[in-house]
Image 1 (cartoon, rainbow, N blue to C red):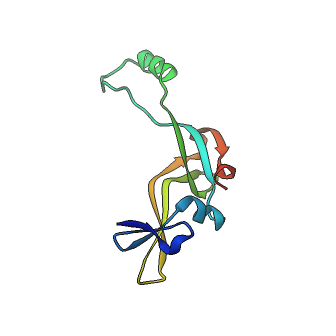
Image 2: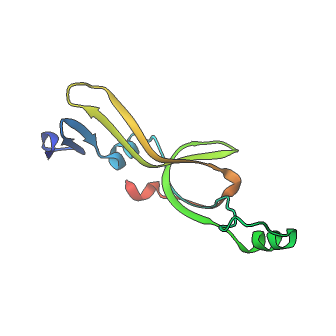
Image 3: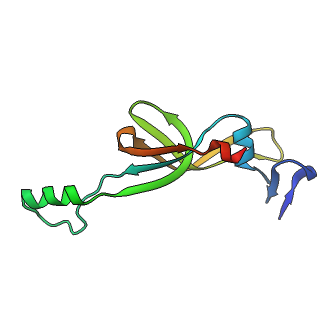
Length: 124
C-alpha cells in the first residue's frame, strides 16, 4: 500500500516503511551535488586474441569506450570521483532513525573524466 503521509511533504509509506523523496530532501539538506559526466573506461579487445605489437597499437588508437553518466557526488579527491546513481533516505514508521542508502556507485579515476556538468540547479 502506498499513500502520502500526513497529506503534505515528500513522504510516502510503502509496506510500513517511510520513503522520503530523495531529490527534494537530499538537495534541501545541501548534502550532495548531482552531475553529468563523460568518462573513458578501461577496455580490451573483445575477441581476446593474441596481437602483434603493431596491431595492438593500431587497436589502442582506434578503440575507445566512452560512458555518459549522471549521479550524486559522494566524495571527490584529486585521484578519484565517487559517484552514486541512486540515493534515498529511508526510515521506519516506528523510529526516528534515518539513513541515506546509496546504489549504482562507481569510483572513477579523475584522469578518466573528459566532461562534467553540474545539474544540481535543475532539481531545486
